[in-house]
Amino acid sequence: MRTHVGEVLALFREHGELSRTDVIEISGLSRSTVNQRLASLHSAGLIEEIGGGESTGGRPSSRFALNRRRAVLLTADIGATGFVAAVCDLGGTPLRHVSELVDVWDGPHRVLGAVGAALTELLGDEEVWGIGIGVPGPVEFAAGRVVNPPIMTGWDRFDIVGWFADYGVPVVVENDANSRAVAEARPHRHDNLISLKLGTGIGSGLVFNGQIIRGSEGAAGDIGHTRAAVPDAANPLPCRCGNVGCVEAYAGGWALIRDLEAAGVHVDNVAEVVSLVKLGNIEAVRLVRQAGRVLGDAVADLVSILNPEMIVVSGQLADCDEVLLSGVRERVYQRSQPLATRNLAIRVSQLGEFAGVTGLALITADQLFSTDRIDELFESLGEPPVSAVQ
Image 1 (cartoon, rainbow, N blue to C red):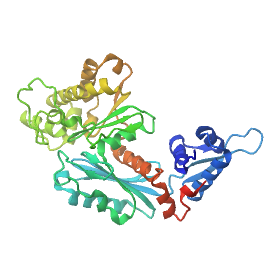
Image 2: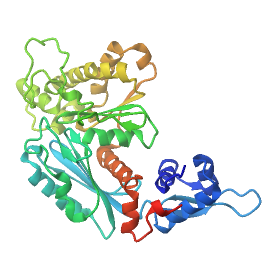
Image 3: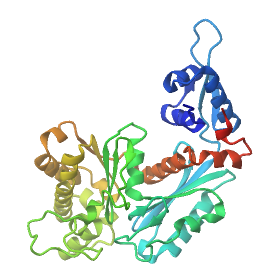
Image 4: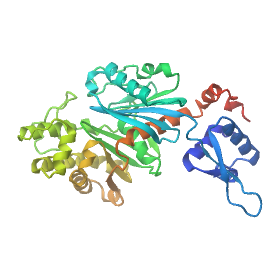
């Protein structure tokens, strides 16, 4: 069975520096086949020689690594009230970035116009090979379209891919929580992970057995619009999605702003909620801790069913740290199966605002270097299609 050159490239993306001998041992390919694959990848500039390896008395073996700076990927992580745009290398590392406020309810033309302007400003003279756009709603991944988003008025089935067609490169559209899950899971090889994005709204991304769980319609993991377990369930609160009793209606950033206002504490945005918590405001601390309990109840069943090794929290509300996480832990450990929580870690992301753009770059690179599309890349570089490499 012939191993595609794209699968050899995947070894470098996963393992980092490798010698010819390493590739032979990991892949099981013959030396001549490995030499052919490496020559093809090196000719295209996808891998680079980085110096000698260990010597056993003869000439040190050459080592190779992914040429991360061969080109760049443009990414934009769009949230409810802002976005982060970045130029990333082929390994997913942001090289330059900018954060801007934006209202997703203003619709795709205004928001994507701002994103496009930011990317143009960030881009230098690098060659662009792909674009990744993250959005806070369900995504039909193959088509690159948002489908029936609960909070994104005017975005349903909008042609986001077509908006960036002038770049002439593959465009990936992904749910923002999914991209964050990949950023948390991939570098540390966490194969079973739940990522919670907590900001104005609530999102959840699932990575299990190393793969994103999107579901048949792209709606998998959307716990923000599942039913909240609250004492006053007979009188459920209305949610922005048009339903009542959703988790987001009790634990989302916009809900916390509403409840603080009702308690006589004026705040304009989620960042101000977080500031109040850090200052020790009693009402803000109480509401955020209760939001953590609501989230914990929502996640507990997922923990029992899916048995993740880790739950990672990102987004603006993650800055509330233990005030929020204590409530999550309380309910998860109380309600989930003991075996499922025995080694479960629940923590705040260390990636900060880069979580989304990093994950988008990794997912975009996955598509760009897949066995289905890498021929197109080679042809665009003037190289023989890799399917011709025997």
